[in-house]
Image (cartoon, rainbow, N blue to C red; front, top):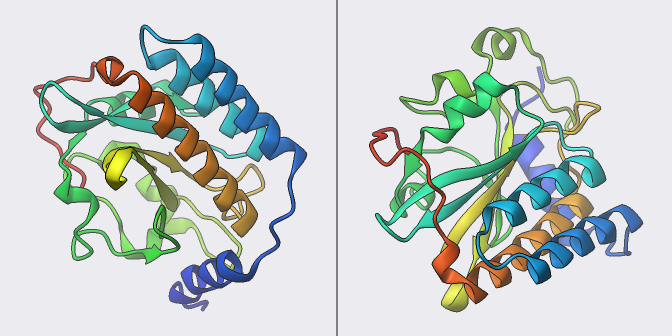
Length: 222
């Protein structure tokens, strides 16, 4: 049986020492987000939908979701997705999170890859009350990780979106790739670039940070 702790260690090691050459697909994704950021100013919803779509297609990520801080109530909410079934997205869109939820290691066990990224594995059950419908529990129980690069149901990675003074504006959440692998180190680096571009765009139009999710939701990321 593969020790799941080795999965996070491998990605963190590859992230630190991996190659940094440019990738055409990654550049295309970044350019798509930059173009949308240049043209969209009334709302960030279209920008985030374009970013999620670009991440899905250019990095071959199976499921992508992006959340932002809602300035009206100070909670973080999912805003856009790509690749999810409607019922799964519905389960995500009703969730809200606090700032502290993102920085309490006792609540979500995972491997910190960098200042931006954290890998969370199914074996550690990185879910809380209210998130039961965001993943397939039966499939997760049946899944077996055979190599350090395998991704199984229940795995995901968070990439933080930062603004000025390292303020947390939101996050990108990705599952495994189309071929059931954990995103490799180069992909993680490019996802962090996309997150930085989103952070710049959101900061330049802070009035548009209105995710519009259900403000009465009580579920929180913990």
